[in-house]
Length: 227
Length: 286
Image (cartoon, rainbow over all chains, first blue to last red; front, side, top):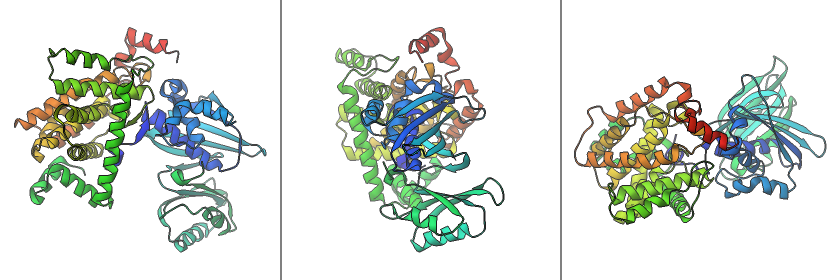
């Protein structure tokens, strides 16, 4: 933890895990979905999120994040009304999932074109968050740094190809983790990056083309990302 | 930064004050220049100041806590208070900011949202009562941050892991370090203030009514301001802690781990399960 994490973050109260973390989670989920218009988002609240949501403004903070707001945005207080004004449809449900993180939520996005995406994330304390699943695929993304998530067939050469492309762009890889469902099956690579200046919005498309086994790339650029 | 003893030792070698040394070490550890760190912390101080201004501008209230901070102002004006003007002013600001947090106000978590009133109370009461300038408040904030970083490394700052001693307790110890720094005390005095404050908060549980950051949080913010202030005064007077600060912090972490889950921010024990606590929680309709 650095000094500005100790004296900080600056946030809308009352709770770092239930309010600030919820806003970050909403924003990260929205970054996963991307810029496409949203048909509807259903938020399935789990554990403590389901039971103390109103008292902590968790519902407002999650929706604020989906609208692109940061945890210190005063607009969090009125986010539910703002979403209605902007024609951003959302709905809350509760669900009881054995073994789920106590402060977690499942987002179910559907687009106007019929595309859907399912994201599970947790607020793990002090405003820190963790994406745990994208479309049923388990992984771990904190969103602290600009991150690329690839989905690819588990064959040789994908990591090397992605790493070489990032090296070519002079992007330092802070961490890289691999997840796979089965040998030769669907796999995922999560790369946290350190980039100078603004995020390179052409990068995800270029990574998608760097190896034929890569089927999809999800960019998560946090603060610099789409809103 | 993992040790108060280490920081104090480095101060002796370098001739720097506690807060200067903390800034120097943070810069070494993070690779950020002292200038960048100073700018970042100044912006935190401004955000804190803004939260104080907003918090006292209106009678904010939470779901269950009423607006009561102004009662302390009216009482202080009578001039017959038992606590001195500084403690009353700091407690009033702490309560106001903590209530503002419950009302979804924009605050600086220092170190957490649940304890967000304590440092602003202790710092901005200095300005109000003694006319302390911003650069000195900033030095105080650096000292507080160093204490927080050592506590995070050795124990925890999260109520869910260590109870309220880890949140409001840490904030009070951080505030005590800030006050000693503002008054020009030595690095050893900073350590003593931290140790003395933490020692009197060991074992404090986190038992929020309805799981909300309101009761007892808001008034604990105000109460613990006085503890940290006396910790600073005792250290400035030359009183030392027999157990060094690092060991006290270790004990805080160990006690936190030993606390049952019902007393670590779950709302399942302590004040939360008293008849009145339960009735208050039910009244919110959650």
